[in-house]
Image 1 (cartoon, rainbow, N blue to C red):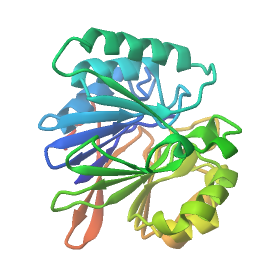
Image 2: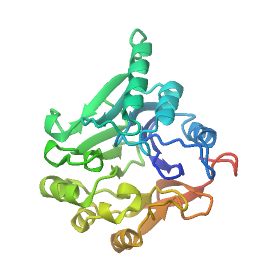
Image 3: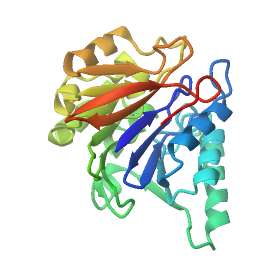
Length: 287
């Protein structure tokens, strides 16, 4: 198992491999001064060249997680078996377009041997938090969203533990844009289940995504933060980075390099290693 955190500007896109399978989390593919869609697509294609993409998880429906161009590119290029998103609808800057794209791809594949299915998830309306039948080399454990705390698009984010079950497997906590108050509810009901050696920094490293009890429950070795170079939000916030460093051995952020940097994280000799990887068009992404 390994995790490829791509630099996509102020947004998120991560791919995870285990065995001969892969799952993609989020789909931001901007065309901006520091990175373009073509670079992202080429780097992603290199990483996934020998893997079957089982699913696409959209942690939220804001454009920095569910960019319509990125969603369409992934659904057409990799033809995953399913696309997952929170059971929550708000007419965001991307939601309507994303749902139109998903519906078109469902229709295109409905009479084929590999139809695309939609997995709309919410903790209080799934049969089990352990989402089964979605992959052979991954388990998926859902923690959020929940109807009681869906007071904003951020707090409607999917929080999910993805665990690879190949020989080098480990757990990766997907966090979306989840805010401090929502983490309080997750801690209350699911705190003892949150432990994971690798986690994504919530809300691009915003201080509003930090929750001290959550970090103690997760007890991560490595924290991976996706944020854009010179972004207008000041992500990651120094307070958040310091909080992560209090509990984690390693904290990495995609905007640490002035041109943006990707990261490949894997288990090595009983521990974890994260190395920098450049996008295509700069230096070849060898992942």
